[in-house]
Length: 360
Image (spheres, one colour):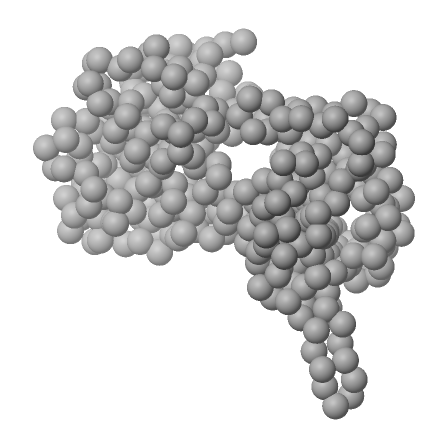
């Protein structure tokens, strides 16, 4: 039997198990040790977990007595001192932007599996937590922008006149960008979407947005479907196009990122200065430097009447739904990881090998 541990986080983070997901585990296959009040921030009670066979325990007891620890947050040095070295660590570990913590784990020769590095294959789709979180982030970005925008999203005809619809510009048409397009369109906005990949044009237009890109650039994708790093002259042309479009936009949502690399700077300071007062920028690439030159990660700023919100963890604010999705992907991953038994993990398996963190 595998003992799986779920810790309580001091901040809003997706929980590695929910009552619905716990039902998918047979009692003779796994037992869950859950820290007291771990589900509180996601609105799940200890009683819900107890009723399904989980054990509620103290943090110290949990860390000392598990085979697998599911994480979506960091561990303190005290936590690590209690956790046996042979305990497997899996989850959302932010390996690209939280290198000190990862280096600490690897220095102790721990087996650490980061779902952010999951290979983009059909077999791995059921474990794709990044796409799940990106979809939530794209939706929430539009709702957050609407809350900060002083205008109205749909066109409104009144006896006092007609209110024009909001103009929304989406940078990056990946999962987050496509969900942002869909949400903004449902709210009645006029939407334009930019991407360096011409292959996404059909998807963008199918959602009712106008697709824009710099004509003539040979921008391709790397294996895995992500955009490649662009040359500086190409980025300059993209910035010029975005400058022209952003000046007319009420809301700009940026989602362009490349795993392990700094986010491309697509919105220059001069562009922000040229935007209409009262406009809103939501930068989902903030953790890797941001797509906007003025973005500060985790901070909301007012620059000359323009609201700029940098938040790469926006999906986590939807704590209950984020936990539901995270717990499903974690369940699928752990079952794959341990399908031959905890002592018979196949480290040659593509998914196992891809997510296992190593010293580079």
